[in-house]
Image 1 (tube, rainbow, N blue to C red):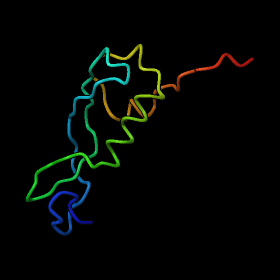
Image 2: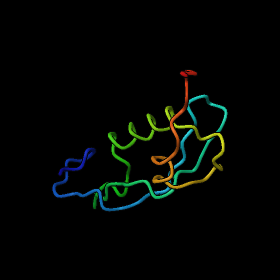
Image 3: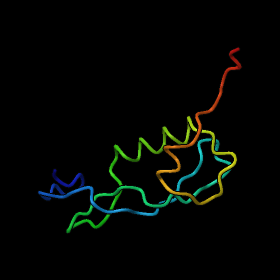
Image 4: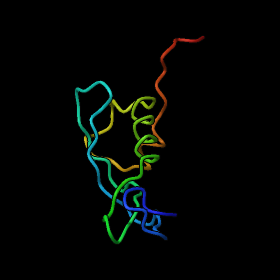
Amino acid sequence: MDCLWCNAPNVEESEKKDCFWIMPDGKRSIKLLQVPAINCPECGIYVSDHRNQKVDEALSIHDLSQYPDEFAYDQLLAAPVKQLFNWK
């Protein structure tokens, strides 16, 4: 694939990056560890727009109230989904 920023050829999502995110409610920030990232020889290591959107969506739908302020990307994806409705 090509770099999203500079169009350099043959870049791969082969790195991991620790990133900071603000929770959707704006009350807390977290450090997300080992997020899959792209390594471009020109631009450096960055998280793709697609991965960024996936993290934003996961932060919105998963219940992270019992999680510390620092946890791994895989833990985010494995977190329980919020129960918005009380179905019986």
